[in-house]
Length: 166
Image 1 (cartoon, rainbow, N blue to C red):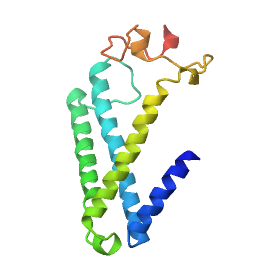
Image 2 (image 1 turned 90 degrees about the vertical axis):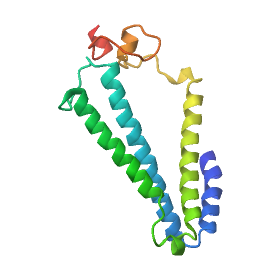
Image 3 (image 1 turned 120 degrees about the horizontal axis):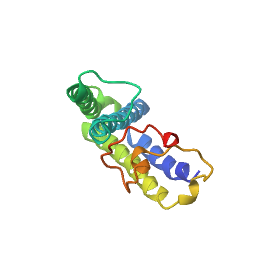
Image 4 (image 1 turned 135 degrees about the vertical axis):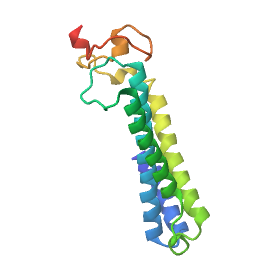
């Protein structure tokens, strides 16, 4: 409820600032595209990191070609995602009619992405202080690094899939 109270005046102001509602819809769609591509960039980076940190871990799928194949797949994914972000932020030809100016178009998209990422970061930081959110009766399988007794995620040497096999 508080999020709606805080967010709706911002959205109403942006709609009022932009001469055409279709322009606001275009910018909102492009903002969502940028956020999705950021998610995919993080996913490809994590894919590569896990290939090095947990090489022995059993997986449901294999990328052919070993580490070279993983780099090719992740590299193509990263390049495609960055290209999609550039295309989403780059103003289209009809931006003058729909939005007003290319500067407003790019600024609003970058601002909306920054606000969403800032909210995610704040919620992530706040969640670290609430240990009572975890149900002690939960049968959550531990991470491999936890099973090996490490304090934080780092390179592991086992291939233990879950805590139930220990």
